[in-house]
Length: 119
Length: 113
Image 1 (cartoon, rainbow over the protein chains, first blue to last red):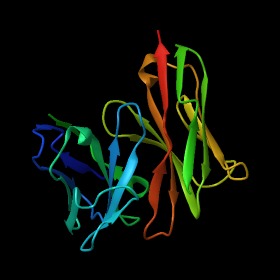
Image 2 (image 1 turned 60 degrees about the vertical axis):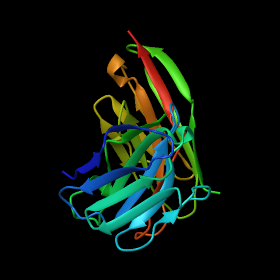
Image 3 (image 1 turned 90 degrees about the vertical axis):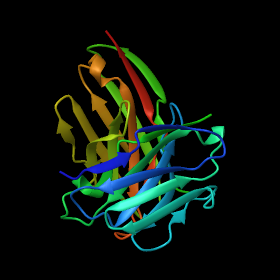
Image 4 (image 1 turned 45 degrees about the vertical axis):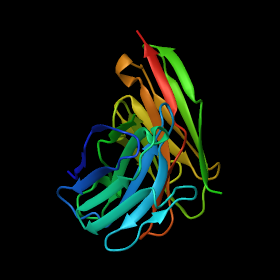
């Protein structure tokens, strides 16, 4: 089955530093990647949509200069939280979408998530 | 504005009880509705519903979509403590090239022994 590998699974960083989160589709080509954040006991909030080789589309209210998304290949997308602050602490999850027939169950496969804590 | 609303937001039951979780939606270009179960990490897929009135079943879980009412329900019978989780409803909308998921707030289910 389709697998999306997300790293790191957790990270603690100091205020003001940048953190990069990677998502890789292991056995299919992810034409589109979605990045979500989730606060405790809340649902997933879509941050941005990225298509391979083009700029990401950010949802309203999400700062594109703070959350840099790169989708340079069909198997890798990265989210960089720049100049992180404690309010950026959250659970970040990626989801890869493939074209039908490439093995991803109904087209959306989630990574295992990254718990970011900014101190 | 597109939105997906789940109810109740939280629920506490005892083992053996039956629960019904609700999801209603208002989105443009609706394509499908999905149910996920989330424990500690990423959501795991439960059901995808595209056609109205056709029940999908998997063990003690079942779900059905009502496109007329713009809603779906997820039923869990004979609940077990392992069913404790957040249940998320999401709707796929948009074109086949750009379809994205909009999630509801989730229902937190706690099953007590």
